[in-house]
Length: 367
Image (cartoon, rainbow, N blue to C red):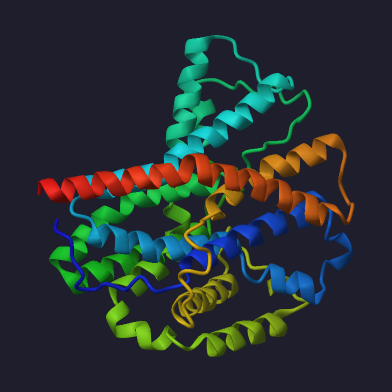
């Protein structure tokens, strides 16, 4: 597999800004619910706008596009997996270690044996799925102590979905490399099958909690980004410079369904109305990425991953203290989260990305 720019989508885009927006949407929507900061605003225009742009769906569309681009441009499958691993696992390792330590010192963790706990911790790190770690090893949480029965790692299920997407995508793209149209058709059929599956399995499904945290029921969202990337040289004109049109369409639909059961976009049940709105949202995301690009606005600082990883730990700490429902939590929650995200970026993620670039450059020089 050689580097290829045949379908290159270019690097002048706003994807970093969009990831930051998505991370902030997830943080604020969780603060709205968990900290009871939005109780008085439920059903208002603010509610409709905030929950019409679900950050998780935005992340999945962006991942579908950019991870596909990364695989196409990678020199080998091994290079692709090294790059993905160095982006995900270092920060994830530290995040889980911090959460586990917080539980340990506050009476929420029961370490019955070092080897047993290490096996649990290893599975947890490799899969980002506590449910899998517990199933294959043991349950170390006491559900008591400072944090009680709350789970500071409540958002990590999406990383499990991401990891299974990374494992699935290369197989689909290798088909696409050999048979372009047939490969794209396979991706489309897989996306349709995923959407059908999502009608029966979602993250709250009591019948199959393991399948629900894989890419299976959510690949239909990723596939929108994947297909857009594979055909970007043909479809880019639909998105580039068309941000106002896509935004107007999205806002019009949001206004139309305001006050109805469709006002809240759910990626879990994948009802036809939700699927349609997410498809429009995917178009808005891609248009926003390539309309009025400002790639240097963040000056290379990417706090989105850290915000996503740490906002629930900050939130559950505030809840455990008893601070809920206060207006100033709209400030305290983001400030605490961004501070931890900045530390994660500076001390963990940025060095890991430099190592990734160094390894890729060394491999190319040897080749």
